[in-house]
Image 1 (tube, one colour):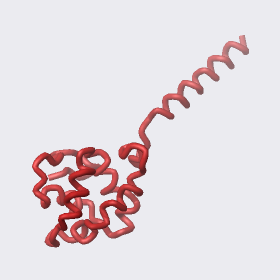
Image 2 (image 1 turned 120 degrees about the horizontal axis):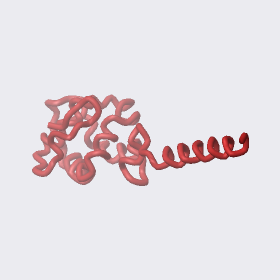
Image 3 (image 1 turned 180 degrees about the vertical axis):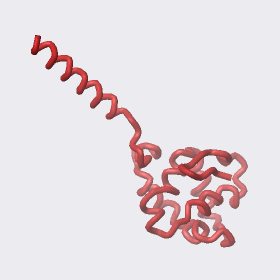
Image 4 (image 1 turned 45 degrees about the vertical axis):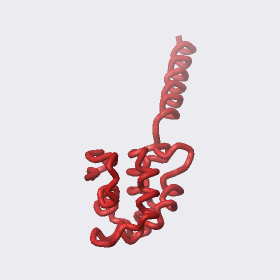
Length: 119
């Protein structure tokens, strides 16, 4: 009777491990495909000032990158909330206004990004 119980426990543990391996990481690392949000954040370097000051002009190069990355709203969100963005002084509540400030017509307005919503 003890051997079947060990087998059931082992199978249960295996199921848990396999199912957790398929889950997206909480920090959004798989939100940007094979690249991490921290690596993708480097592409948004032209947006640094605009992500800290809502009155700052948003450069064309920033808008171009936001438009590309914004096609995947979960990646854009993960970047805005990434450690790289935070350590660069990015204010998520301001950074998330950049797609609107760039007048991107098909931006993911209303998309929930952590405690924030894209305008």
